[in-house]
Image (cartoon, rainbow, N blue to C red; front, side, top):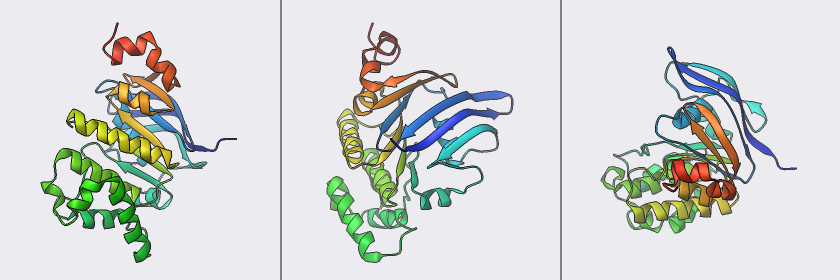
Length: 241
């Protein structure tokens, strides 16, 4: 039986009188690449922040379980220690640190220096552009290079579950293809991924299953290939029909 890594039940998030998430259910099983697609303002990023407990002051109701345990009250660093890492929208790299130093920060929960350096070399193989610039300040990198660095930094913590929030946002088409190539490669290594993405076509092509979010509600879910062929998805998110 497939192990359940993340289970969201009846999640509601309200900012004052505004309901951003209106009671959603979502599951991610071990080894899956799941995508959550939808328009701007649908509640996708709010959902990820509710999972990680990084929302500003707001009311959060419902249940979020990671690896069979409630995540209520856990701090972000405790989530990383338990194997959950997030690459936030906007990347959030340490701009005044080098690429190498950013990667070391990703491994702050680890103590074996030899293993940490081996991990850095491993991800440099996946992101060769970062290796070429390892001493360069992160703030001087292009948007695509910063996205690669943010992903590599998160992977340094050996996550069981990787949350990706809009990894293709603002990138050139060539860089978007590269980022998705890496996402598929990471998934192939057995790392479970929950991907929030506006590029519905690429997201569904990479994913095993998908969810559609509209105005704070999950309006559709299913096998990614089937969703790619669904007329409603094609019309609303793929620019067809």
